Image 1 (cartoon, one colour):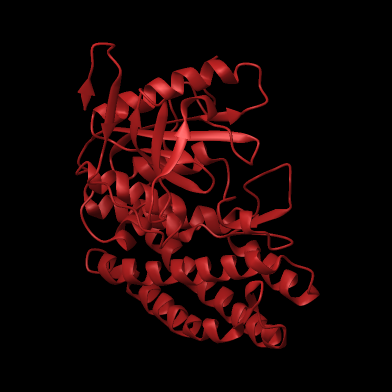
Image 2: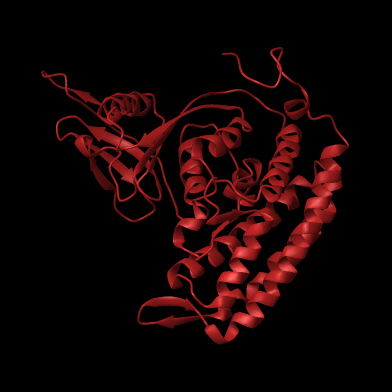
Length: 338
């Protein structure tokens, strides 16, 4: 960091590294937390412990937004990070609101303060990216989105993008949470996601969990779907199931009760290895091979059954131990104070 006579500052966290492999939020979270020493281990463990790997949402027309439309981000991301014992704060909203300029100004300052503390910030670009640096002289932020070069964001354009909303997530200190507890909570979050059909009510254009399979299969069968979105959904889905398998392979060493679930996800991940053969290359990019759709739908039917069986294992494991987060009411009852 430098400071000149005019007190303009800059900071650049060159040690941060981001690779697009998992969900974009998970990729960003991994970059930020490993960069500040809050997480050690492979990315699939982070994806599993936060339960981000289990989030599965599909738009009825298989639009690409499906992959990140797994609910209201503040509500979805806070428990994911909290399960790691990391303090986190989210902010965001609609840029059309008359108060946006005030929030924008405060957010710009908060991001710079986080960078000065050596912590990157997650930012909706879209998709999610990591703010790794700033320069007051040029009035810009530097962002990583998984590409080879940094993206440049003007302070004046902070929060403005092709979508109508903005979002940031910042991180603080960390407390130690026993790995055994984190794993148990992660499978409880997985069950909750599986059993919640809609995360973006009142709209029902996007389905979550078990119902997402129906939206995916119906979209493929009726043939009216976004070509790029279908491939993106399927590839992201297949990658996350491999993450779950690898996560459970390690988790079952701590929770032997999860061994049957590992076997099921190992079977599922193996089955999905045939997925690339159901795509074709076209002048417009990779697309689903229409002639392979009946076979693909049949495979998804089997996949849903396998996940159903895994969720039974998760549910039985969860019910065998106290769940204070969901069974203990605050002293003012089920509602917050007013």
